[in-house]
Amino acid sequence: MASVKISHITKSFGDNLVLKEFNDTFRDGEFVTLLGPSGCGKTTMLRIIAGFEKPTSGELYLDDLLVSGGKTFIPPEKRAIGMVFQSYAVWPHMNVFDNIAYPLAIRHTAKNEIRQNVERVLDIVHLKQYAERYPNQLSGGQQQRVALARALVAAPGLLLLDEPLSNLDAKLRESMRFEIKEIQKKTGITVVYVTHDQTEAMAMSDRIFLINRGVVQQSGTPEEIYNRPVNQFVADFLGKVDFFKGIAEEGRIVIPSMGGPVLPYHGDLRGNVDVAIRPENILFRDDGELCGALEAHYYLGDVEDCRVRVGDEIVRVIADGYGHASLNGRKEVRMHVRDMMVFKDDGALDEILMIRT
Image (cartoon, rainbow, N blue to C red; front, top):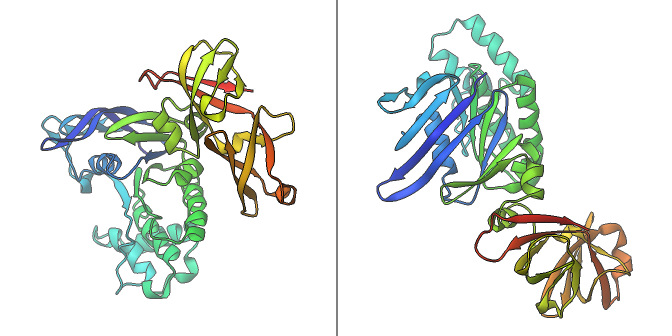
């Protein structure tokens, strides 16, 4: 397998700075996701790793081999990398077996070795029974697995995936997330995965690199980034969250726009703060510190998605769907905030304190 060392890589297209000082190491056997909004630089980083782009400055190593940087540049075909794109890009005139065998065939690999390797990856991607079928006889998910098998057949040390599930319907996309993760575990291959879908990133990654405007805002495990975001962009991009202007005092935070409810607070900040509350961290409870009018609630089966007016604010609450009937006909509700995040309001948004109540 392979590790990827990214040393102070910057990439510009003319005056447009796309990546700034990307500096980290993707470990051997790790599943890394580059996450962020469209145009943030995540695909550019993937293309630099693949060898389709050269960095403006900085160096890229695969294991200990310098492949991009200074006067050194090793082309994509010599990097032992497999890549799967957003489009399936399977040959319509070839059956599944021949599509997967193609990378080995153009290397003039012996026929018996081709058959052994293709049968091995067909088994991994659960397509053995479809070996003789053509792409037009396959579903979208099956075609994507053909593309994945083709990338794996030559046993690359590194697999790059560029939004490979975005063309699939929601239910198939969900099942493919787990299939790809299982394949990665089974093969032990290092994976770099690009997506703008936070759910994909959370479900599949060992580590997430959240990028905005070419700068890595935060890297860490899904749990770290979700529960301890370093700034408001990270908190807002990953998961659902509402922000409220508050005033921190000793032992409490007051939110004037809600009519002055008091939330317990034991941090060191004083004065203006931004309070971030995820809707799943608000509980309907008779002794809750927030009181509001239930304006709408939407039954989604597993959860109840509610909107509660508190003063001038609309507070979103994700409640257990089991309690759906208890909300019918209710006008006033009380709520307890079990978890909130407090950000400084002076521009230093990387100063964050997680409060658990």
